[in-house]
Length: 87
Image 1 (cartoon, rainbow, N blue to C red):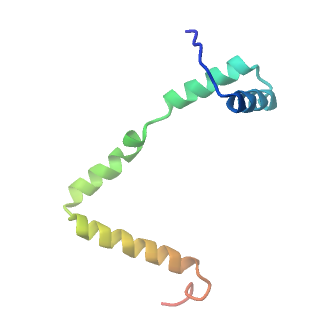
Image 2 (cartoon, rainbow, N blue to C red):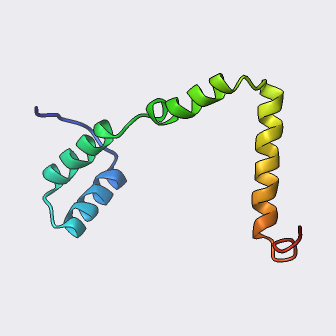
Image 3 (cartoon, rainbow, N blue to C red):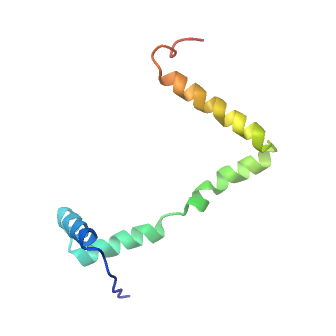
């Protein structure tokens, strides 16, 4: 397949610079970027198992909010030197 696309000048410059840095011609580099982009799983695909587990947990939105707020707090506290070794 052949595509003809219009890029902003600064985007084209960056594309050419990155292709050169990778040792590729710009057409091959751009094709590889596009192939990688469309081959990668979507956010919905990546989140599907998590969403399924949340649905199956039976937790309410409020319970989930509280659960994740608690996890964030524990994570932040675990990174603070003054709280890292407190029970």
